[in-house]
Image (cartoon, rainbow, N blue to C red; front, side, top):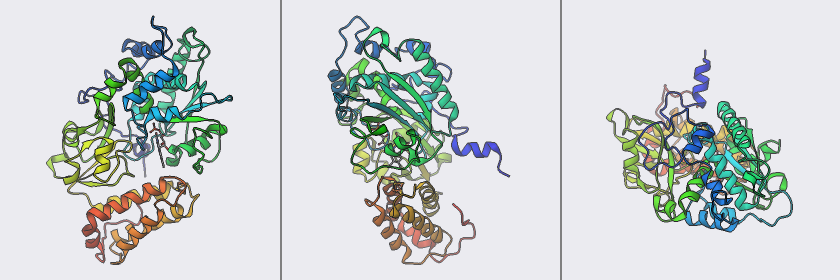
Length: 451
Ligand SMILES: Cc1cc2nc3c(=O)[nH]c(=O)nc-3n(C[C@H](O)[C@H](O)[C@H](O)COP(=O)(O)O)c2cc1C
Ligand code: SF4
């Protein structure tokens, strides 16, 4: 019988060292956290809410205009940490500030990408950094109402965020006339129910409106038609968490932490076959080899076989390629994959790639929202084909068929979940086709018919 702990362990990385260690490099978001210093007093002692005081002119200075805040974020080279790496300052400049009606700011804390567990640590152990980042973003875009949509299976994180919101309201950082200024911003928390698709920004908006969480056609994009049809800006938790440091230290200082076009630090959730899985905050542009070393190297001294560098939807990279990469958007893209959400899944030489792909394909089949045929039907076909090969009942033509089904999903769906399901398949075939071929026609008694 499955125990409660086993069920929970599917959702929470039980026993995994998270962010409390000294193996970050120049951390900005996880700096000086110990698990108990999450409250507003601790955050203020770390310099928290100073950036907000600065922009509102409450630290003796003149304050910053909306344009100056947006320009600083542009200068910083901050790119969205939710997956696509879109430049944040540019996104903020799309908000029609003069729009006469309500405008909304939304934080995407849905964090459902397999392998990713960074946002929950930010919200649990440093929630005020997200609140301050959101207030600054709201000020910059002239927004008065915001929501943080938090993954439903980490309810304690939602409760922690609610507690932090209460503290911020009581201290005058949230609500009407913040710190005595003319700027007002109301921020609310909302928890989802664990559907991966609700992390896709338009599905998230639908869910926030109380509807079924299914993606919308784009365009129109949320900047013009977002929550309740009003202009909306959505950013990831880590993206907002980066903002206070940028305002305090300036755009160029943030850019200098990383490399050109890839400003600042990034949190990588390292999991799989390493000695010390956990969250590591390091400058963008750090060599992958260094990150692997921080995570204790490959478990039990085995050889590195492959790495999924940016969450389960990013194409797998063999050891020989990833060991030459630096961890930033441009280097990983050049190598043929994506930095994505920064979930680094390490596989040693004992891993069967067919079995790994079978597990991934099952996930995407399960999480497809079913709106469009190539994704709804195609993800099922992908899983059944990989399962068939894994059981030794595949046919020689199955590998081409698999590639063909994956190619026909890509670019033909409403949202990027279709691509996310297809890309791992194509990359596995590209790099590990002989492993698939070796399983054709060889009965595999260990392969269960489920995922
Ligand atoms: C299927 C799917 C799931 C996604 N899940 C998340 C998620 O859990 N968290 C997140 O921030 N972005 C997720 N995204 C990306 C969002 O749609 C959006 O691009 C992001 O929140 C924008 O924030 P950023 O610019 O700060 O990265 C997902 C996208 C897709 C297609
Ligand atoms: S691609 Fe998949 S998840 Fe996205 S809208 Fe279509 S069916 Fe839904």
